[in-house]
Image 1 (tube, rainbow, N blue to C red):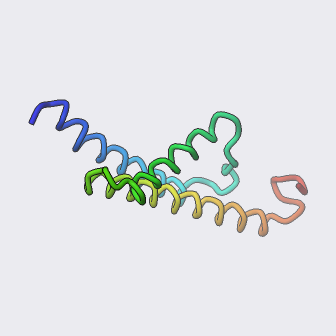
Image 2: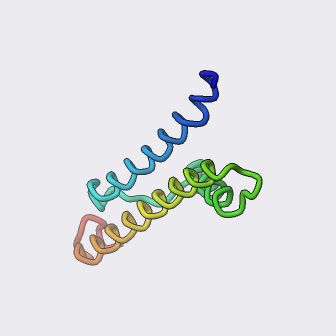
Length: 104
């Protein structure tokens, strides 16, 4: 196995899934008022997430390991986004109209 094959078949998937796990931890530990919806170029991340989820679900010509790590990464990112939105909405409800949002 060449160095390139080791990097592309083992290191990259580990880094992607590890990064997605870090995003889940950040969703739990970051302040709920720091959440913001994607704007401008940030929607590209949504497109990449959809491509990874699509490859995992419908990538028939993909190896099983590739589909598994892409699916795990897409699931972790979706969980992190759901947690962040839930925490932010709960924080806004508690803050009320006099909170940090200024009544928005």
